[in-house]
Amino acid sequence: MTPHLDFSVNVDHVATLRNARGGSFPCPVEAARVVVDAGADGVTLHLREDRRHIRDRDVERVRAEIAAPLNFEMAATEEMVAFAERIRPPYCCLVPEKRAELTTEGGLDVLRASPFLAEAVQRLRAADVRVSIFIEADPAQIQAAAALGAQAIELHTGRYAEGPVEDRAAQLARLKSGVAAAKAAGLLVHAGHGLTYDTVGALAAWPDVTEVSIGHFLISQSVFEGLGATVRRFRAIMDAARNA
Image (cartoon, rainbow, N blue to C red; front, top):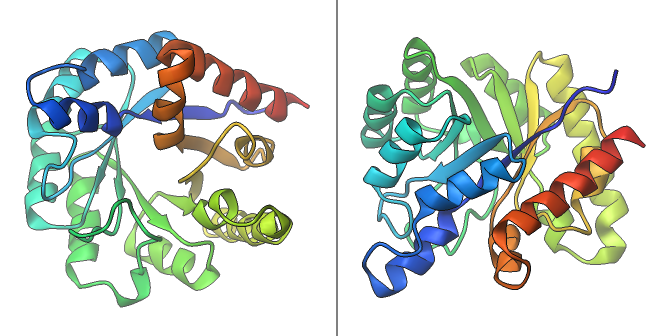
């Protein structure tokens, strides 16, 4: 039987739209309900240091009110680790974060990370949170993530999804090598960043990829198609690729 591919939807940019005017609309918690009802397996939220989109209360409400698993994206800082220890999301993904960046610009450099990264992984695991690290498809980085005690990695797919079309075959080969390295290290493999209708299928077809996370394109496309319809279209594309 073909293994199920989990689909986590990042609703951060529903909060971006809310924050543009203040107030409470549109509500990212309601967006989380819609995407789960439409076929998403989980919800991803990134609580940034500057709270530019998701806020603390959004995370608390999704954790309390949405039945599907929360994947909590976070920088490896004392503030965020303490927050995760308090709310205990089922999953977290440790990501690099720079205040001036528009979006996450690449994978976390595990080889050059501060000693606190190892402490963060151990504290999260002690709180019964499954830990993944957002990372490039580099065997050395992947091995370092495994050595820290991470249970999963999320491969950064931006260079594949957002780069020139003529480079996609080479980028897919690089990602596939990363999947193999992660499997050899005993890690679960997730993938995400910049994925669209045109680019998600190739990754969904790989049985060793256990989860795909999609946010910006999905939320943007929902302006034209509707949020539920966009989730269902992604789910259909991924299921067709998985079962081909």
